[in-house]
Image (cartoon, rainbow, N blue to C red):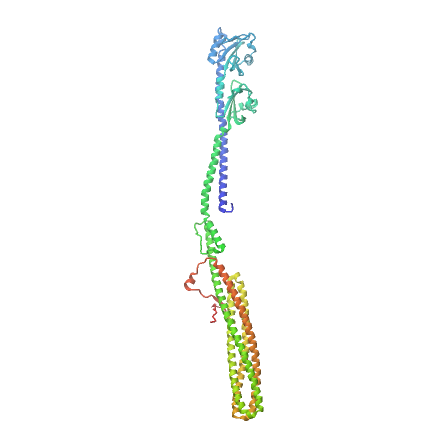
Length: 630
């Protein structure tokens, strides 16, 4: 998956962008969350303070009314004052308890005989505190409703005249507290002393311990929250987390608590987080699309370079192909470098192709020349065999002449006939010697041709060595073959020189024999003219015939040696031909390897034809010789 450079760049870039967006979203979220927490705390405190202020005003109004009734109840019509207090303050009933244990009520309620107001909680609390008090909520025995009692002491001349009390139904207050609902799942409650619930949305919890709501709502925790403004406590209520703010109610020991649902309070933050994640996904998707398209276009040059290199590496590369060089970036630089590399390889392979073609042509010429030389060597060997047979005939003729000369010494009476026969024999000897001289001349020409062949073979081997050196590693086999050919050519040239020396010696002696035969012919003519000199002439013929026999024996030895050298030359020519065939095969393999690449043709060669390659010879550049044995 990550083998592609484009994919790695795309993934790394997307990872960096995603990381940056996540970090930015995290910082933004934390910043907004901090402000949101502060804002929620302020909002929560504001809600609690506002509603607490309303409750405080309600309590203060009842307290003021009760305290305002102190003077009227001291007059002659305390009942009227109590009735006015009850009606104006919305009290369920008002009453006045006196130190003598009597009780006056606004509604005419007559207490039982055992009822003593001085023992009631409201009376005791008001007298002990000597101030207006608000009693704990309780259920009124007559109405069955939750009420609280406001009580204030009445003094006259410094002495206690009585205690005014008024029962107030707190249903509306409870409804007001239950109506505090900042969010659908939030609620408010009213407690006394951080211990007892006065108001709660769940009516069954009224007058129940505060810890019924949450174990964390201890008196100490409620007191701490009440002493700190805009502070809140995270509590679990009914399995849901709430943010609790508590505000004390002035003039009472009540506390108004507002429990804000944390999930609903942080809904905006959750929305911000979700929108940030959605924005992250959208930005990543758009970035991946745009960056992918840009990288695809940018890396198209690299992909073309890769495809071109794979094409070349597969052995079917087109070296005439060039990559477009657009722009000045690294991809354009790679394309330019690739074009320069391919151009250089193209020129090198052109040279290799031309060199392999030249080697192939030279090897073909060497092979053809070797085959022609082999045929000519075989012909020379056949001529040498014929020459050997002729020399045997000459030897037989000379022996016969010697025998005739010996018989001529004893048969002088038939000298004339023998002289004629001798003249005929001498004529034949002259013709034979002339044939020997012609054969020797032909052998000399053949040896000259062999020497030229050896020289041209050596020169071709030298050219093959030069071409093999240019071919480099591929031409090492050619260089070895060319060295062996040069050695064989040198040996052939040396043998040809030896053969030529022997043939020159044989020619000289044959010339000498021919001269002697001519002299013998002249002698035979003299014998015909003068029989009396037959004996002397025959003696000279016998001596000359002996020398001829020795010379012919040497010629036979030289011809045998020439035949052996010719056979060796034929074997060397076969080896040279085989080496040339191998060189041709190697040249064909090199040409086949180069043919695996597509190359353009040389314009100069197409327009002007191939120029002959030059080789160094005797310190000067000369055209490479071409073999032609036709």
